[in-house]
Image 1 (cartoon, rainbow, N blue to C red):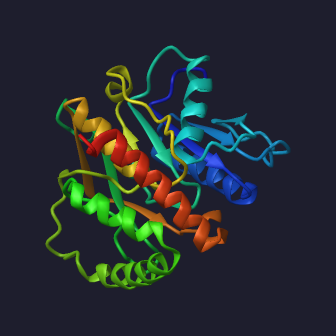
Image 2 (tube, rainbow, N blue to C red; image 1 turned 60 degrees about the vertical axis):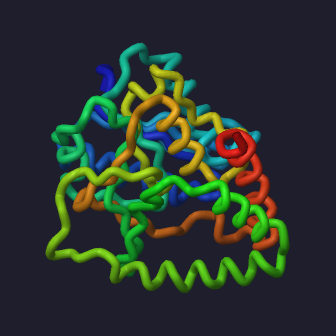
Length: 275
């Protein structure tokens, strides 16, 4: 495809080349079924995609520094922009462990949305049907951020919090009434990070994916930028994505997660909330 794509997907490969290749094939199949011009740029954060066979519509760029998820996608976008002057209609920041429902991209392109909408999140479900959007409907208070900083500071307290959070998430799957679901964009503060679709306006107004912290808190980083730009975010019920949660994050030591969460929350607090 020589023409500029209608949809550009940005993703990261880190120690999961097989999963990434399968994702590229899945997107290619979606593009054919939906008759939509889609390109994917993979930020290869560990070099394991070097032997990757060519996949139509995909481009692999290597960044062995492993800058993380958002910053890896920022690197991918920068490389893509060096080759293309024209913006796509949507830029998707996505995990490689997701699957798009048939007709997803056709529906995405057909949506009529307000001009000031910067980001749209799909109806993301885990395999057991637990919903991941809306991720956060309202902006957290300064007290919320300070509470999280306190929890993330101590290993023993973080373990208790993490266990309770997992139990609460399992209960969430009963929270959505499938029969009475409203099939229209629902305003939110933050969208779940496994699949976020951004309009070019976000970047043209100065928004960025270059995240100074590592791995955690990207949703809030994006949400705060959107608010500062005078724009909005929404999620779209019924525009379905399945999130299989096969990420290598599951292999990270719990104490390392705590440290990264603390560092990310400290950055977000200093940057956006401590004013």
